[in-house]
Length: 262
Image (cartoon, rainbow, N blue to C red; front, top):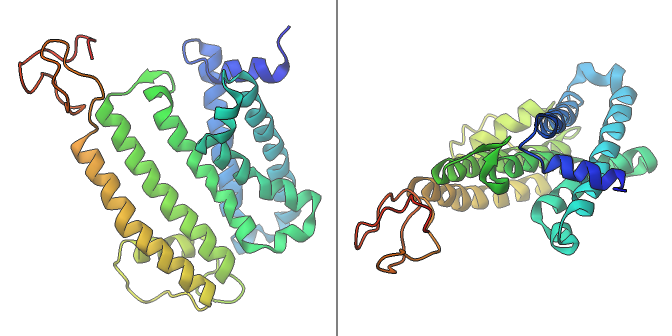
């Protein structure tokens, strides 16, 4: 008889049945709630609900921990799944919510709290896993565009989370996550209005690293989205290589590349 984790892991991988798709929809919906609670908790009007927010985050973190274990239990290669970047991001993102409840002192670690924003990384898995989006097949170009947009969102949100946790309480310009996100967009796009700036040395260091990452990684991602990936296999007729994913016919002999031979 299958264990609960194995059965749930199978549901998470099931994109063919209504039951499997609904499970995926609910999981990603809860992911949005988890992220929303973190963002909402940074605003002043959330203060009266602080303990309730922490409790809800803890319950959701327990669910995502169950999901994490389920994916590992169902995976054909347990070791590979544990080392999967998506899985690593998943466990790191829920660690703060689990630790803050069980070890309250952990909440004082700004970097630990900001790691929770890594749940954004889950949407990259949504866009790229098996080249499908909730069971719907994506073209190679759509996969790369989804990868680009999601990666940009990850960079901006992760930088905003770090800056907020570092500067809030010290810098009056960072009152909530929205202020930090606005600063991240302005700083990492090199617009640099100068109306919001970090005051701490650590905040300045994070901005410097984030800026270097943004001006190198984002253009590279956008370039990939524009150019597409290169096919790994050879043309079935002339054996030539180097065909890009957007190519419909072989560059050398005109063989139709959409017939499943590549």
